[in-house]
Amino acid sequence: MRGRFNTTQQENSSGLTLRRAFTLVESILALAIFAMASAAISQVCYNCIYPLSIADEKPDSAATMDLCLAAIQDVSDYDALDDGIDVTGLDGTRFRVYGYAEPTQIPDLFELEMVARGESKEIKTKVLVIRKGWYEDTNLRDDLVEDRTDFLEEKRKADVRR
Picture (tube, one colour):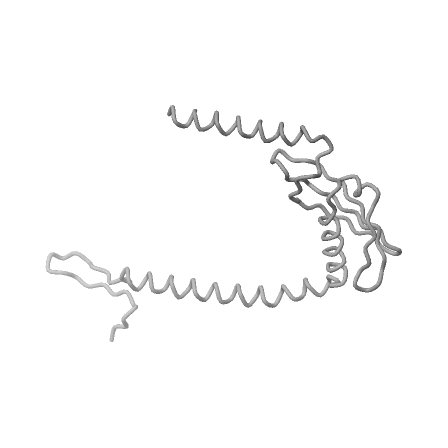
């Protein structure tokens, strides 16, 4: 008795040996089942490992960092970042938050390095923030906008010529 998935050899009328193998539909179905099983296994592994990585983090530290970033983003004057801002964390710890912003090539986008110094710890992080009024020289923003506008117009003209 032959099984459905066993390869068997048969001779046809011309004497050639024929082999029976998997059809295309059977192969695609097997690949689809394998893909679904792989996705399910990877999700189970992720769900097992992710909580272990969260256990090492302290939620109050992340919340304090969010409070410090929010306080810095509320500042409209760049000079106030140099003097520092007082922030009280969720656990009552007082922090003095300093920010050092560097303009990027994109107008109004700054790379902000935040340093929050508390009684027993220090938090440092870098983020990108959008702030219009943080330019020390107001002409710098206008120059950036003009440079970007010229660059884009030249690029459009070059693309039209092609």
